[in-house]
Amino acid sequence: MNPFENALEQLDRAAKIGNIDPEVLLRMRHAEREVHVSIPVTMDDGSLRIFEGYRVQHSSARGPYKGGIRFHGDTNIDEVRALALWMTMKCAVADIPMGGGKGGITVNPKELSKAEIERLSRGWVRGLYPVLGPQIDVPAPDMNTNPEIIGWMADEYAKLTSDTTGAAFTGKPVGKGGSEGRSIATGMGGFYTFDALREHLHVPTPATVAIQGMGNVGGNAAKIFEEHERRIVAISDSRGGVYEKNGLNVADVLAYKEKNGALKNFPGAEEISNEKLLELPVDCLIPAALENQITKENAHRIQARVIVELANGPTTTDADDILFSRGIMVVPDILANSGGVIVSTFEWEQNQKGEHWSERDVLEKMKTILETQARLIAKRASELQTDMRRAAFVVALERIATALN
Ligand code: NAD
Image (cartoon, rainbow, N blue to C red):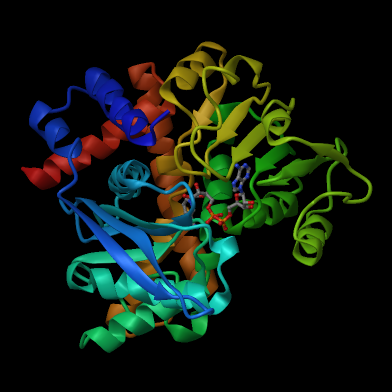
């Protein structure tokens, strides 16, 4: 499934039940600007390679474009378009003063040295800096990009422009203008959202959890959900996962992966494929890796009570219908994983004001936003007798319409 087609279908489905102005819908189907750059990189052996880079600036109706940069071998313009559209919706759902954008480079970073990744990251900024900036477009990390990479990008941007605030990029290292709490924000926000909706979702306390993906989002979510006495029975990386029905020790699993680079032969747990992990009988399933993981092929085999989407676009619309008819609630990505962009916005605000907030303040402010919006969207879903994804899109589109009028 092309993720952009999935995103457009999500828009249409919400518009049908939400009485959305057709002109607003038409605007949302098209990004305001798409920039495609060729990035020349001198490799360590002296040869030259050209990489394809992108920035899709979907909507600035509610504020500067905001969204991460993904490094992945399969990244292409349609994936970035979908991710940018979801960012517009996500920022509107969180009711933060940001629009939506997304960036990427088609590259498998595992094949590059650290020095090559740094040159590539700086090259992306050299290609795109005229269309970036604190009041224009503010990128952040996504898959395979991290604070170190964002730090290089912010540094390159500062060299190329007169901006000294650091507010053109978020997700920077804490010592270099980054916000406290940003690295755990998406996982933490996922937990706050889940916890605020416990009653609505009818999940027991403590709940059992399976997580697909163990990068920034999945790894932090695993630690946070475990801390709150919820059993993590399975977790995976791109090559597969581990399963223990009585609960894994998350710190041990993460340390094993760090040391060995993979989960193979992790002691005291069964190996499990990514496909089987999604079908485990758990209270809460957390996809935290890629798009298109729950589709019409496997939706009827999902046994989780609820799905909390920390990845972007893990569920197709066909699968949404199957899950809804089976009474499996989906907490949609544009709500569940918005903790990252909320704290990114706090970082942007702190940089511009020259402030540095404590982790406690940051998390408390994020929690208040997520609890308020999660409850509002659950209520709207009940009123509209629909799933939370459509309700979240309706709320977002209404807010965007107000900004456009
Ligand atoms: P990451 O690069 O830190 O981690 C990605 C994880 O996914 C890794 O554990 C990797 O092994 C795993 N993975 C890759 N391919 C896989 C496959 N085919 N099957 C199973 N696992 C696979 O990336 P991240 O920042 O944790 O992002 C993960 C997801 O969360 C993405 O969809 C991203 O768009 C979304 N997201 C990230 C943030 C953020 O703040 N970083 C915010 C909101 C949403």
